[in-house]
Image 1 (spheres, protein in one colour):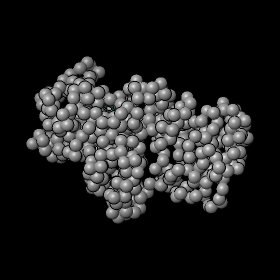
Image 2 (cartoon, rainbow, N blue to C red):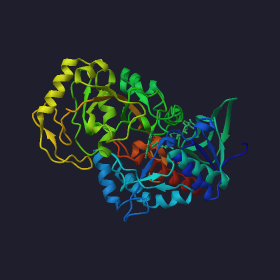
Image 3 (cartoon, protein in one colour):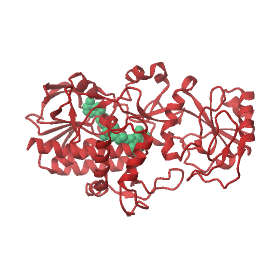
Image 4 (spheres, protein in one colour):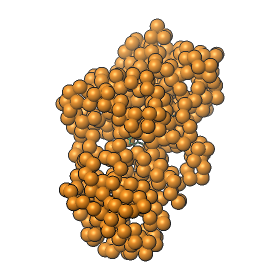
Length: 462
Ligand SMILES: Cc1cc2nc3c(=O)[nH]c(=O)nc-3n(C[C@H](O)[C@H](O)[C@H](O)COP(=O)(O)OP(=O)(O)OC[C@H]3O[C@@H](n4cnc5c(N)ncnc54)[C@H](O)[C@@H]3O)c2cc1C
């Protein structure tokens, strides 16, 4: 590891590998430093299933056109316009080419599974999931001559104004220092650092579960911001979904997510509903439920539904809590049986309309007259046995990170781009995602900005 590298990359996930391959293909020497041990390489990317890409016609695995304009409108809707529009458009334009480029790096795709996801047109699914996608990228990178070191965490950077010189590294044997002509930060968000989360969320963060890697603690993000790189976003903005409350604190992955909100109602620990479960189709709403539960007492909630709905969604790893009657279900969940009974009865009485239930579109089956109505997919909860899943906020990744420009260069305090420092993936996701989320954008951000950062770093060094 001696000598000066052309491109030094922090991280070992999608963004880092796309950057590494792009820079190496441009003829540069590339060193990837991954904080995790080899088995856990690739952070949150290990857990992924798909990636959102614009395309003008159906492909082998995507069912129809999804134009850049439609992608942009979806992004504007989910972020409520809180995005850097120029950067977002640039990313979406680059996503057209991404499907082909990623496949050229050895990644394979498959058609979307059926079920509640409704993503077959917009999102390309990795054959074998994120781990398989990642292994393909590593194989290609290694074959091209990219060097990788595991259990190497970049903890500090040495800058001279806008120019990066060297990084300080923590290793199992102590520490070291590496010089390079450019740096690409692709080291994820800071969601695994609960103390940092508490700066935004207060004590509530202690009840959050972290869906992915325990290694994304934001050490490099902190070092960069402390060294004069501009911060984007605040500590409360993140992607957070409702996950099974019985999931482990870290790395529970996708099989703890619960996609059954639309099939029933959601109550808090006071056994009352707190939000419209039928507001919009699930891919556009699944990512609000983490925040909603975070605002409830003790950061816990319960999704309730009845027997005919049990097999309509992908199950969690854990079985639901089950009872023959609603009061018994309440007891199992330590909820007030009278209050839960009243909530379910009130909901059932308020259901109007008997249009055939269809969760893939806004079906208009709603309640009327409740304090908080369910505006689609309202069906009476009346056929035993009754089921419930306890859920907590599951933090996927945070949005606070480093500001970048349209060449993936980090922006420094005076508003100018850094000479030779780039960022890609979760660490700069806040540039595109000021708030909200649409399924599959995390991987688009990583791949589009990762490849761009690799190309730009290579061109700079040349
Ligand atoms: C359960 C789950 C399911 C998901 N499903 C999807 C999906 O289907 N589609 C989608 O688009 N998104 C999905 N996401 C989000 C997606 O995983 C991320 O947006 C994406 O993987 C981020 O890629 P990245 O390369 O920026 O970060 P990561 O893949 O997390 O990689 C960051 C890497 O940096 C390393 N690292 C951290 N700090 C340092 C340091 N200081 N020095 C060196 N290395 C460091 C970490 O060990 C890690 O390997 C999912 C996330 C989770 C948790």
